[in-house]
Length: 156
Image (cartoon, rainbow, N blue to C red; front, side, top):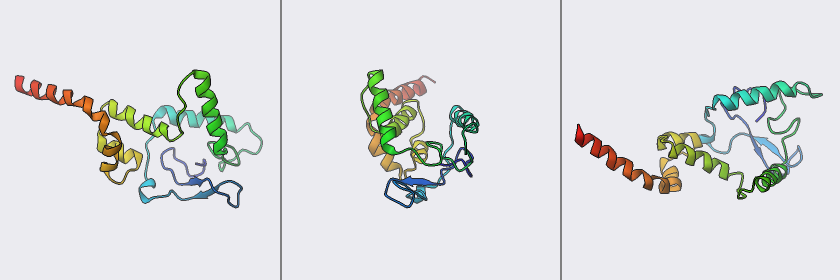
């Protein structure tokens, strides 16, 4: 995602990792229709990105076409992977794939009571079934909550 046209909410570009005119990457539109959506971001992330942009003004040649994850070119995916793996090793935690951060976000939302339909929309799933099939195991613990709800309704 570049700074240009970025309101902090709408992914309007996708970087595909293929040999292209620019080297190892090409800028394309998002891969599916559901990927072209408004994605609200928490204030803490928006503020962090704005602070990062402000700090980047000190770099020679900075402009609004710089990449958030990189500079005039996006970071190579191998660099991100190596940094993630190095940090996981230093922290003594299990290695996970970059895509697993997406699963962690969805799991965190579901465990904290987010509506599954809204989680599906946030993830860009076109069908709620896709989200339910992936995260249904997380709802088994919620059955007790349903029983408690019924018990509470019976007390009224």
